[in-house]
Image (cartoon, rainbow, N blue to C red; front, top):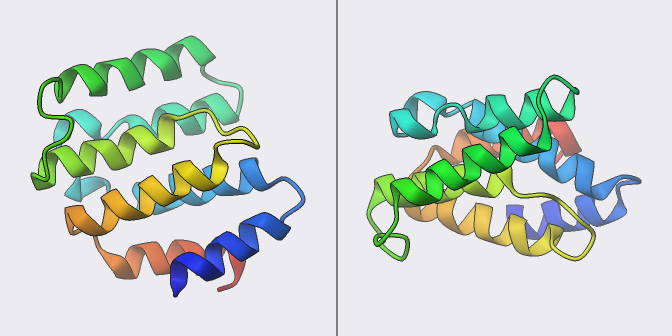
Length: 130
């Protein structure tokens, strides 16, 4: 139910890609301590990028670093891999063609990894008043 409401809210937002990325940054930032140590910097890197303090190359380098960390295990359902995949979603460029797909993966990995649902819902309330 939350996913459907979020998709509707994001689709009606004037700058949906920006809103979606901010939502994911806020959500993952709230569960940083639940992430594997190597994935904890993902939200910070993309946040710095969105504020102009980091380059696109830094975001790409962070995404590549995380993919390499799970190389050969990327299809695993192990919680640590799913948490890293959730962080990778935050690092993806948000364009109009991929926003819904990236969010769908973000939700799927979040839930399968066992990250705190309350934190996800809080981010939805803060960003979209849901």
